[in-house]
Image: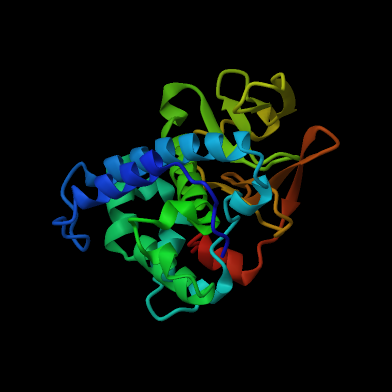
Length: 266
């Protein structure tokens, strides 16, 4: 959709080499280790590429991660909506990041998004791994996939005593929301460290978030900002936590049927 001028040749070559070195991989059944390599490489790669992009004075809005896969892509014959639902609403079903990464590849989510984006935006480069990074859509796609990865990481780290999720919770797209099981408080900060960390909420009234309850980080009202959602075990009521005026405010909600399907509720 938007060609990035003067994109560094060494960065373009690096992405090309990574994929060429793995051209014999059966994407329908990737080997152990491939999924983690895929997720980690692209996280590091887009971080460095976007650092150059921003330092060069380019428009950051063009490379923002998609909040969700565009509906025109989701309706494509190649798109596996059931696989997407598992990645988004059942991240805990993946035991490791490698399992998550291999699933994103083997379910055709990654390939279909690239293929359909190339058709949708009439830009074949988006589907050519040799040159895709010089297009802004590449960062829309892989920023979204990295958010899927970070959402899995946050859930997986409940057992480590601290969990975090990245995305837009209040204003910026590089915010980090953390939860501490020790005092059950929530803090908001920035990945770049510019913004000081601050406590934005407390969920002690509702018990421990890491007790196995259904728990999601999701843009439940489609306003471009993420909310915290959980099912209260003793009442069966869903609660939503949304940051307003600098505070994480909780309220009971009733999920719409479509959202219930996404969360795989009984």
